[in-house]
Image (cartoon, rainbow, N blue to C red; front, side, top):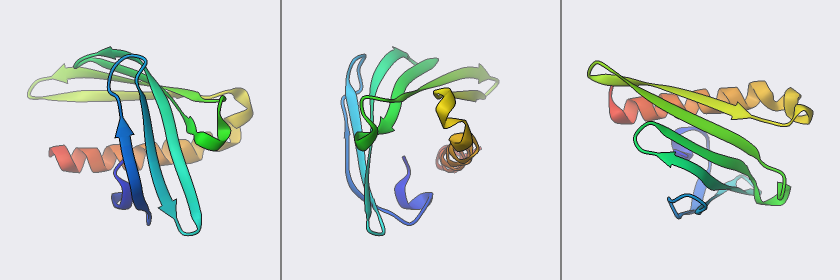
Amino acid sequence: MFGCNIREETILHLKTDPRVNGTFSYLVQRGEQTIDHVGTYLEMDRPKRLVFTWGTADSLPETSRVIIEIVRQGSGCELTLTHEMAPKWKNFADRAKGSWVKMLGVLEKVLGE
């Protein structure tokens, strides 16, 4: 999700099957580390709501759940992102939040204010 616009990494592949029960794989190289972010689309209610699992290939079958809700506001919209994680990941919550804030910041720039 936005690759080198967020951090120093090389995108190796972006694969997505954008439908309910479809999957995605965003494979990146960060230094010596290869990370495959994977998930399954659980809900799609265009243009209002998107729900998907989120994890890495090496953490499967354990995943978290991301809920994106979009509400029209005048000529724009408001996006709310909720990332539900198991309690054991509570020490990772701030890092995850920071990553989502960066990604949504890039999205805002791409779409324009």
